[in-house]
Image 1 (cartoon, rainbow, N blue to C red):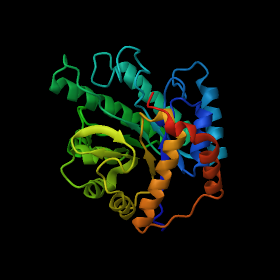
Image 2: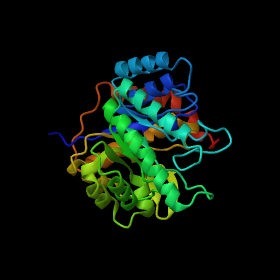
Image 3: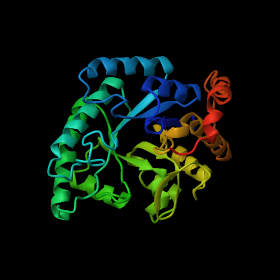
Image 4: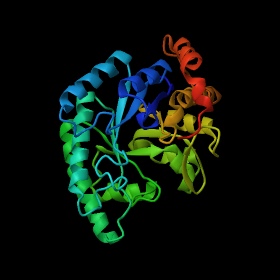
Length: 311
C-alpha cells in the first residue's frame, strides 16, 4: 500500500470566493480534496433550493476529482449575534442538532468521507453536569442519524470548548458506548497548543479512531492557526506518523483567517507540505497537470494578493 498522503484545503480559508471558484483553485493547485464548511455563501444548509445546490456541488466535486469532508464550524450561520451559537450545550441546542442532521444528509449526498463537529464552549449559565448530559444526548442522536446515512462522524477536540483534548474525547466516546461510527477529527495545531504529548505521539494515540485531519501550524499555549513554518511544529515527523498510522483520509489545511490572500496561502501551503512529505521519506505522485496549473495560478492570480493586509 502506498504511504502517500492526501492533502486538502478548507473552504473557510476561501470565504471571499464563490464556492465553485474556490473548488477550482484548490483543484488547480493539486489538492486531493476539500474540507467544506457549510456557511451562508458556501452551500447554506438552510437554503430553499438546497437540493439543487447540493447536486451542483456534487457535480463540481466529481468534475474536479476532489474528495470532500463536511465541516460545521461556521461562525454566524445559526445566530447573527452569537458566534458559533447555539451549540449542543445551549438551552436552544435543538437548532444546532437540526443543522448537524442536515450536515450528515448533505455529507451522504456528496459522498463525504466524514462530517466533523465539536462540543462548543460551555455557556456560563449552564453547569458542567448539565452541559455534559446535553452533549452526550446530542451526540447520541447524531450517531444514530449518521449510522443510518452511512457517514462517519469526526468529533473535534477544540481548545477552550467542553471537549478540548484527546482525553476528553475518549471520555465522550466511552459515555456514548464507544460506537464505531464516532471517530475523531484531529487538528495538528491543537496538539501542539495543549496536548501534553509530542504531536506525532498524539497521532499514534488516536490512530484507530482517526477519520479526519486538519493541519496548520501553532505555538504552545496559544490557539492561533498559523501558516506552516511560522509556528513551532516540526512537520515531517507528523506526516510520517500519519502514514505509519495507516491514515488514508484527507489532511486538510485549516487556515480560517487567511481568506484575504487565499490563493497565495493555499499555494504556499501545498508547496510546504510537499517538501515536508519528501523530508519524511513519503512517496508522492503529482496530479497530472497540477504543477503547470499551480504555476499559472501563481503567475496570474496570486501576486497582488501577497501584498495585501489581513482584512
